[in-house]
Image (cartoon, rainbow, N blue to C red; front, side):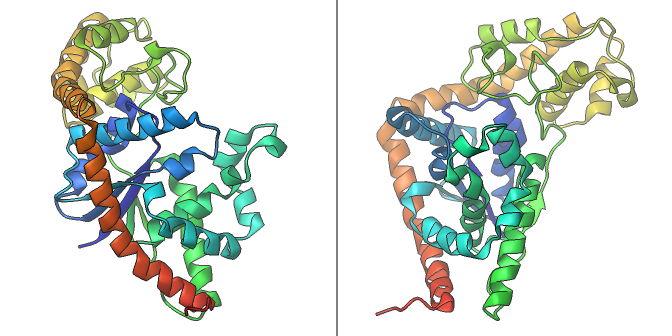
Length: 332
């Protein structure tokens, strides 16, 4: 059974984009993989976070993952800062990775923008910690979005260089898993932009605890174009908002764009949006209810995270200790 590692930022209650792009896939992977799922609070502080909000949002994300179907009896769910082996291996990887490799990371360039001199060094070395997150468990598969593929390529470069430098075959190769027809859910207000909690407009996203009334209002106001839905998937070309709404419907109904259009092609958006709203409410209401129940009992969520951290540490410690031995750290 292959081992999977994946992490998610503690941004509080997740969006539909988080759910369809990652979380729902994580639930399915539990059946036939050895899975570790991590709320990556160390990564979060590469940009300043309010301490109280960070703690609350870490718990909210953990509760949301449990509500979506992550089963702590099948998988290990924990928060990153609770397992110090990540940091120990990340420092070794800081010394293995090359500046030129990190300078090529497009995500750093996008986040830093024109003010590269003002961002944290943590943001620059973020990919090294990401490599440590995965390799400290000798994980071989990572479900990610396309925007993280370059970071996985770097993680493989780091693993190969470590193995070469120390004459071992210690760290395994990592395979990126890009999953699902809605792996990239876009804003409801702009089909060219990814759905995100950082968007100033709450109307741009579906939050996983939105009520039925709020979901209906957001979908009703979602940007579209004047043409009816096409009968074939090719007709979505050049229509980003239509493609996005069809993609959301396809993912929620476990079909593809063509399957949705066979059923809804030729309809105007008013009728399609009503059907999409009903589907969203049906799928998300149980998750929202369970999230609220868990957040009303934070001790239960914290107990899951503590147990997950204990299990994760038991897997990570032998790996990081062997890496340190290979490097030459004195053990007394």
